[in-house]
Amino acid sequence: MVGTFLYLTACSLKNRVRRRLRRLREPRYLIGLIVGAAYFYFMIIGRVGRSRSGMSPLTALGPFAEPLAFAGSVFLLAAAAVAWVWPGSGSPLSFSRAEVQFLFPAPVTRRQLIHYKILRSQLGILFGSAVVTLIMRPGWIGGGWTFLAGLWMLLLNARLHFMAVTLTRRSLAEHGRSALLHQWGPLAVVATVITALAATVAQHWSALVTLPDTEMVFAEIQRIGTSGAAGAILWPFRALVRLPLAASPAAFAAALPPVAALLALHYVWVLRADAAFEEASAEQAERRALDRTAKPSVSRATAATPFRLALDGPPETAILWKNLILVGRYL
Image (cartoon, rainbow, N blue to C red):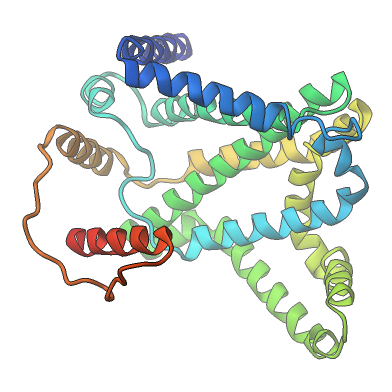
Protein backbone atom coordinates (compact mmCIF):
# COMPACT_ATOMS: atom_id res chain seq x y z
CA MET A 1 0.00 0.00 0.00
CA VAL A 2 2.92 2.35 0.62
CA GLY A 3 4.02 1.90 -2.99
CA THR A 4 0.51 2.80 -4.14
CA PHE A 5 0.51 5.94 -2.03
CA LEU A 6 3.94 6.90 -3.35
CA TYR A 7 2.73 6.41 -6.92
CA LEU A 8 -0.39 8.50 -6.25
CA THR A 9 1.66 11.26 -4.63
CA ALA A 10 4.16 11.30 -7.51
CA CYS A 11 1.37 11.46 -10.11
CA SER A 12 -0.37 14.26 -8.22
CA LEU A 13 2.87 16.23 -8.01
CA LYS A 14 3.58 15.69 -11.71
CA ASN A 15 0.10 16.80 -12.70
CA ARG A 16 0.30 19.86 -10.48
CA VAL A 17 3.65 20.90 -11.98
CA ARG A 18 2.33 20.25 -15.49
CA ARG A 19 -0.72 22.41 -14.80
CA ARG A 20 1.48 25.24 -13.51
CA LEU A 21 3.76 25.01 -16.54
CA ARG A 22 0.79 25.05 -18.89
CA ARG A 23 -0.26 28.35 -17.35
CA LEU A 24 3.01 29.90 -18.49
CA ARG A 25 1.56 30.07 -22.00
CA GLU A 26 -0.36 33.10 -20.80
CA PRO A 27 1.79 36.25 -20.64
CA ARG A 28 0.57 37.30 -17.17
CA TYR A 29 1.77 34.07 -15.56
CA LEU A 30 5.06 34.09 -17.49
CA ILE A 31 5.81 37.70 -16.58
CA GLY A 32 4.88 37.00 -12.96
CA LEU A 33 7.26 34.03 -12.86
CA ILE A 34 10.13 36.07 -14.30
CA VAL A 35 9.56 38.97 -11.92
CA GLY A 36 9.21 36.63 -8.93
CA ALA A 37 12.38 34.70 -9.79
CA ALA A 38 14.33 37.94 -10.27
CA TYR A 39 13.05 39.31 -6.96
CA PHE A 40 13.90 36.07 -5.15
CA TYR A 41 17.42 36.05 -6.55
CA PHE A 42 18.39 39.70 -6.08
CA MET A 43 16.54 40.42 -2.82
CA ILE A 44 16.95 37.12 -0.98
CA ILE A 45 19.85 35.12 -2.36
CA GLY A 46 22.03 38.05 -3.40
CA ARG A 47 21.46 40.37 -0.42
CA VAL A 48 20.31 38.21 2.46
CA GLY A 49 22.13 35.02 1.60
CA ARG A 50 25.57 36.55 2.06
CA SER A 51 26.26 39.51 4.27
CA ARG A 52 29.07 41.99 3.78
CA SER A 53 31.28 40.14 6.20
CA GLY A 54 30.98 36.97 4.13
CA MET A 55 28.96 35.11 6.75
CA SER A 56 25.57 33.55 6.13
CA PRO A 57 22.66 34.45 8.42
CA LEU A 58 22.87 31.03 10.06
CA THR A 59 26.58 31.51 10.82
CA ALA A 60 25.93 34.98 12.19
CA LEU A 61 23.35 33.56 14.60
CA GLY A 62 25.90 31.11 16.03
CA PRO A 63 26.80 33.18 19.15
CA PHE A 64 23.09 33.56 19.95
CA ALA A 65 22.30 29.84 19.66
CA GLU A 66 21.25 29.38 23.30
CA PRO A 67 18.98 32.47 23.56
CA LEU A 68 17.54 31.59 20.16
CA ALA A 69 16.89 28.01 21.26
CA PHE A 70 15.15 29.27 24.40
CA ALA A 71 13.00 31.75 22.47
CA GLY A 72 12.13 29.06 19.92
CA SER A 73 11.17 26.60 22.67
CA VAL A 74 8.86 29.17 24.26
CA PHE A 75 7.26 29.84 20.86
CA LEU A 76 6.70 26.12 20.24
CA LEU A 77 5.21 25.70 23.71
CA ALA A 78 2.83 28.59 23.05
CA ALA A 79 1.84 27.10 19.68
CA ALA A 80 1.20 23.72 21.29
CA ALA A 81 -0.96 25.36 23.97
CA VAL A 82 -2.95 27.32 21.38
CA ALA A 83 -3.65 24.09 19.51
CA TRP A 84 -5.43 22.78 22.61
CA VAL A 85 -7.49 25.87 23.44
CA TRP A 86 -8.22 27.34 19.99
CA PRO A 87 -11.52 26.08 18.56
CA GLY A 88 -10.83 24.03 15.45
CA SER A 89 -13.04 23.86 12.40
CA GLY A 90 -13.55 21.23 9.72
CA SER A 91 -11.94 17.80 9.72
CA PRO A 92 -8.69 16.82 11.44
CA LEU A 93 -7.49 15.32 8.14
CA SER A 94 -8.21 17.21 4.95
CA PHE A 95 -8.98 15.18 1.82
CA SER A 96 -9.89 16.33 -1.67
CA ARG A 97 -13.07 15.24 -3.39
CA ALA A 98 -11.14 12.80 -5.61
CA GLU A 99 -9.40 11.27 -2.58
CA VAL A 100 -12.74 10.85 -0.81
CA GLN A 101 -14.33 9.19 -3.86
CA PHE A 102 -11.45 6.81 -4.61
CA LEU A 103 -9.88 6.07 -1.21
CA PHE A 104 -12.81 5.93 1.19
CA PRO A 105 -14.78 3.18 -0.64
CA ALA A 106 -11.55 1.27 -1.34
CA PRO A 107 -10.28 -1.51 0.96
CA VAL A 108 -8.07 0.98 2.82
CA THR A 109 -7.89 0.95 6.60
CA ARG A 110 -8.03 3.99 8.82
CA ARG A 111 -4.34 3.64 9.68
CA GLN A 112 -3.44 3.54 5.98
CA LEU A 113 -5.41 6.74 5.37
CA ILE A 114 -3.46 8.45 8.14
CA HIS A 115 -0.20 7.17 6.63
CA TYR A 116 -1.28 8.59 3.27
CA LYS A 117 -1.92 12.07 4.71
CA ILE A 118 1.39 12.03 6.57
CA LEU A 119 3.14 11.06 3.36
CA ARG A 120 1.41 13.78 1.35
CA SER A 121 2.35 16.41 3.94
CA GLN A 122 6.05 15.70 3.36
CA LEU A 123 5.97 17.58 0.05
CA GLY A 124 5.09 20.89 1.66
CA ILE A 125 7.37 20.31 4.65
CA LEU A 126 10.39 19.44 2.49
CA PHE A 127 9.75 22.34 0.12
CA GLY A 128 9.44 24.83 2.97
CA SER A 129 12.57 23.46 4.66
CA ALA A 130 14.51 23.69 1.40
CA VAL A 131 13.46 27.32 0.86
CA VAL A 132 14.46 28.32 4.39
CA THR A 133 17.77 26.47 4.01
CA LEU A 134 18.42 28.31 0.74
CA ILE A 135 17.74 31.65 2.41
CA MET A 136 19.86 30.92 5.48
CA ARG A 137 22.66 29.35 3.40
CA PRO A 138 25.01 27.90 6.05
CA GLY A 139 28.62 28.94 5.69
CA TRP A 140 29.92 25.39 5.37
CA ILE A 141 28.83 22.48 3.21
CA GLY A 142 27.86 20.16 6.05
CA GLY A 143 25.62 22.82 7.58
CA GLY A 144 23.29 22.66 4.60
CA TRP A 145 22.06 19.10 5.04
CA THR A 146 22.05 19.26 8.86
CA PHE A 147 19.94 22.43 8.86
CA LEU A 148 17.59 20.97 6.21
CA ALA A 149 17.18 17.65 8.04
CA GLY A 150 16.79 19.33 11.42
CA LEU A 151 14.17 21.77 10.18
CA TRP A 152 12.33 18.96 8.40
CA MET A 153 12.15 16.89 11.59
CA LEU A 154 11.03 19.94 13.60
CA LEU A 155 8.19 20.72 11.17
CA LEU A 156 7.21 17.05 10.94
CA ASN A 157 6.93 16.86 14.73
CA ALA A 158 4.80 20.00 14.71
CA ARG A 159 2.58 18.57 11.96
CA LEU A 160 2.02 15.31 13.83
CA HIS A 161 1.42 17.16 17.10
CA PHE A 162 -1.29 19.39 15.66
CA MET A 163 -2.86 16.38 13.93
CA ALA A 164 -2.84 14.40 17.19
CA VAL A 165 -4.31 17.29 19.19
CA THR A 166 -7.11 17.78 16.68
CA LEU A 167 -7.92 14.06 16.66
CA THR A 168 -7.86 13.93 20.46
CA ARG A 169 -10.20 16.89 20.79
CA ARG A 170 -12.62 15.37 18.31
CA SER A 171 -12.44 12.06 20.17
CA LEU A 172 -13.33 13.81 23.43
CA ALA A 173 -16.25 15.55 21.73
CA GLU A 174 -17.54 12.29 20.23
CA HIS A 175 -17.06 9.81 23.08
CA GLY A 176 -17.13 11.94 26.23
CA ARG A 177 -16.03 10.05 29.35
CA SER A 178 -15.04 6.92 27.46
CA ALA A 179 -12.49 8.97 25.52
CA LEU A 180 -10.88 10.03 28.80
CA LEU A 181 -9.92 6.41 29.48
CA HIS A 182 -8.40 6.06 26.02
CA GLN A 183 -6.65 9.43 25.89
CA TRP A 184 -5.63 9.72 29.53
CA GLY A 185 -1.90 9.88 28.73
CA PRO A 186 -1.82 13.10 26.66
CA LEU A 187 -4.43 14.76 28.88
CA ALA A 188 -2.41 13.97 32.00
CA VAL A 189 0.71 15.46 30.40
CA VAL A 190 -1.16 18.65 29.46
CA ALA A 191 -2.61 19.02 32.96
CA THR A 192 0.81 18.49 34.54
CA VAL A 193 2.43 21.06 32.24
CA ILE A 194 -0.20 23.70 32.97
CA THR A 195 0.04 23.15 36.73
CA ALA A 196 3.86 23.25 36.77
CA LEU A 197 4.06 26.40 34.64
CA ALA A 198 1.46 28.19 36.74
CA ALA A 199 3.33 27.29 39.94
CA THR A 200 6.66 28.44 38.47
CA VAL A 201 5.26 31.80 37.35
CA ALA A 202 3.60 32.38 40.71
CA GLN A 203 6.82 31.52 42.55
CA HIS A 204 9.05 33.94 40.61
CA TRP A 205 6.58 36.68 39.75
CA SER A 206 7.51 39.00 42.60
CA ALA A 207 11.21 38.81 41.69
CA LEU A 208 10.55 39.48 37.99
CA VAL A 209 8.45 42.60 38.51
CA THR A 210 11.14 44.21 40.67
CA LEU A 211 13.94 43.96 38.08
CA PRO A 212 14.72 47.41 36.65
CA ASP A 213 16.09 46.44 33.22
CA THR A 214 14.41 44.57 30.38
CA GLU A 215 17.62 42.71 29.61
CA MET A 216 17.82 41.52 33.20
CA VAL A 217 14.20 40.36 33.02
CA PHE A 218 14.91 38.32 29.89
CA ALA A 219 18.04 36.83 31.46
CA GLU A 220 16.07 35.84 34.57
CA ILE A 221 13.29 34.33 32.47
CA GLN A 222 15.88 32.32 30.53
CA ARG A 223 17.43 31.09 33.79
CA ILE A 224 14.03 30.05 35.14
CA GLY A 225 13.09 28.40 31.85
CA THR A 226 16.23 26.27 31.74
CA SER A 227 16.11 24.95 35.32
CA GLY A 228 13.62 23.22 37.57
CA ALA A 229 10.16 22.25 36.45
CA ALA A 230 10.02 24.87 33.69
CA GLY A 231 13.29 23.58 32.28
CA ALA A 232 11.93 20.04 32.20
CA ILE A 233 8.76 21.22 30.44
CA LEU A 234 10.66 23.24 27.84
CA TRP A 235 13.28 20.53 27.27
CA PRO A 236 11.42 18.74 24.42
CA PHE A 237 10.81 22.02 22.61
CA ARG A 238 14.40 23.12 23.18
CA ALA A 239 15.60 19.81 21.75
CA LEU A 240 13.54 20.40 18.60
CA VAL A 241 15.02 23.86 18.09
CA ARG A 242 18.60 22.77 18.78
CA LEU A 243 18.57 20.16 16.01
CA PRO A 244 18.56 22.58 13.02
CA LEU A 245 20.92 24.92 14.91
CA ALA A 246 23.55 22.20 15.35
CA ALA A 247 26.99 23.65 14.59
CA SER A 248 28.54 20.39 13.34
CA PRO A 249 27.56 16.88 12.24
CA ALA A 250 28.65 15.58 15.66
CA ALA A 251 26.35 18.06 17.42
CA PHE A 252 23.55 17.10 15.03
CA ALA A 253 24.03 13.41 15.82
CA ALA A 254 23.98 14.17 19.56
CA ALA A 255 20.75 16.19 19.27
CA LEU A 256 19.01 13.68 16.98
CA PRO A 257 17.93 10.89 19.45
CA PRO A 258 15.48 12.97 21.56
CA VAL A 259 13.91 14.48 18.43
CA ALA A 260 13.52 11.01 16.90
CA ALA A 261 11.94 9.80 20.16
CA LEU A 262 9.48 12.72 20.08
CA LEU A 263 8.65 11.85 16.48
CA ALA A 264 7.91 8.25 17.44
CA LEU A 265 5.71 9.35 20.36
CA HIS A 266 3.73 11.71 18.13
CA TYR A 267 3.29 8.95 15.55
CA VAL A 268 1.92 6.53 18.16
CA TRP A 269 -0.33 9.27 19.54
CA VAL A 270 -1.84 9.92 16.11
CA LEU A 271 -2.50 6.23 15.51
CA ARG A 272 -4.10 5.72 18.94
CA ALA A 273 -6.63 8.52 18.44
CA ASP A 274 -10.04 6.97 17.81
CA ALA A 275 -11.80 10.01 16.35
CA ALA A 276 -13.89 9.38 13.25
CA PHE A 277 -12.75 11.77 10.54
CA GLU A 278 -14.14 10.12 7.39
CA GLU A 279 -17.59 11.76 7.40
CA ALA A 280 -16.28 15.21 8.33
CA SER A 281 -13.54 14.92 5.69
CA ALA A 282 -16.07 14.00 3.01
CA GLU A 283 -18.31 16.95 3.93
CA GLN A 284 -15.38 19.35 3.96
CA ALA A 285 -14.11 18.11 0.58
CA GLU A 286 -17.56 18.48 -0.99
CA ARG A 287 -17.99 21.96 0.44
CA ARG A 288 -14.55 23.03 -0.77
CA ALA A 289 -15.23 21.66 -4.27
CA LEU A 290 -18.55 23.51 -4.46
CA ASP A 291 -16.91 26.75 -3.37
CA ARG A 292 -14.36 26.44 -6.18
CA THR A 293 -16.92 25.76 -8.89
CA ALA A 294 -19.52 28.28 -7.72
CA LYS A 295 -19.69 31.53 -9.62
CA PRO A 296 -18.71 34.54 -7.52
CA SER A 297 -21.71 36.60 -6.57
CA VAL A 298 -21.53 40.30 -7.32
CA SER A 299 -22.57 42.43 -4.38
CA ARG A 300 -24.48 45.54 -5.37
CA ALA A 301 -25.03 46.76 -1.86
CA THR A 302 -23.58 50.10 -0.87
CA ALA A 303 -21.40 50.60 2.15
CA ALA A 304 -20.97 53.70 4.24
CA THR A 305 -17.64 55.50 3.97
CA PRO A 306 -15.45 54.95 7.05
CA PHE A 307 -14.38 58.61 7.21
CA ARG A 308 -14.46 61.76 5.08
CA LEU A 309 -11.67 61.75 2.53
CA ALA A 310 -9.90 65.07 2.06
CA LEU A 311 -9.21 66.51 -1.37
CA ASP A 312 -5.44 66.35 -0.82
CA GLY A 313 -3.14 64.23 1.30
CA PRO A 314 -0.92 61.14 1.14
CA PRO A 315 -2.05 58.45 -1.34
CA GLU A 316 -1.85 55.77 1.33
CA THR A 317 -4.85 57.35 3.05
CA ALA A 318 -6.93 57.11 -0.12
CA ILE A 319 -5.93 53.43 -0.58
CA LEU A 320 -6.87 52.66 3.02
CA TRP A 321 -10.19 54.51 2.57
CA LYS A 322 -11.03 52.46 -0.55
CA ASN A 323 -10.08 49.13 1.07
CA LEU A 324 -12.17 49.84 4.15
CA ILE A 325 -15.19 50.42 1.92
CA LEU A 326 -14.48 47.12 0.15
CA VAL A 327 -14.23 45.28 3.45
CA GLY A 328 -17.54 46.77 4.52
CA ARG A 329 -19.19 45.47 1.36
CA TYR A 330 -17.89 41.95 1.97
CA LEU A 331 -19.02 41.98 5.59
